[in-house]
Length: 184
Ligand code: RP5
Image 1: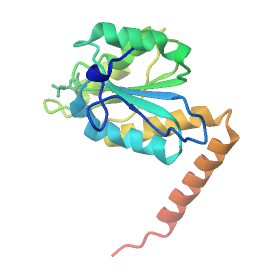
Image 2 (image 1 turned 180 degrees about the horizontal axis):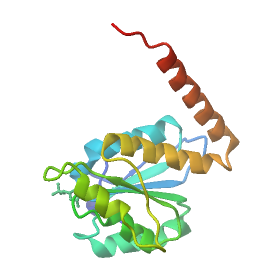
Image 3 (image 1 turned 180 degrees about the vertical axis):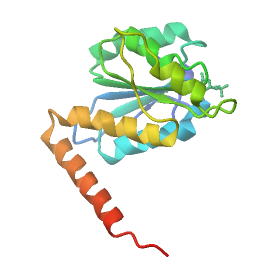
Image 4 (image 1 turned 60 degrees about the horizontal axis):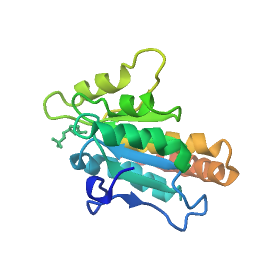
């Protein structure tokens, strides 16, 4: 399990969201990222899950810098009640693959926009999994972070009518906004 000192969220410690969540108190979704520098992007996944009232937790762990922590975390996630793992990393982005290798939970990968190659390196490293160990890969950067959360919510909503209703309402409001858009 991640120690407080080696995990991080908004304030540099691990973060468990929504203690009063109407969906469930213990975390259903784990959001992990390879570096604290990924938080500025991954906070959008955190915010989206919070908006839907989905209990979740956010941690920093790295496939390369903390390999044992990453494998232990993923191995134990299902037994802690986690149902989906969202894993973000940049560059030689192996974190989502390592998570997927150690669990049968669905793993969603978010490639970080890297300085060197604008995230193309992260995208290919995350998406090109060999057959047998899937990682559902989202878009590079902020859209991917938001969509990973929405994808996790959609999976959870299959068996949670109240969450499904929130998702339907979210889509309705989103559509309304586009229909109401006016151009200068
Ligand atoms: C990856 O390396 C992280 O996911 C991050 O996107 C990238 C750079 O990490 P830092 O050097 O900023 O810690 O492991």
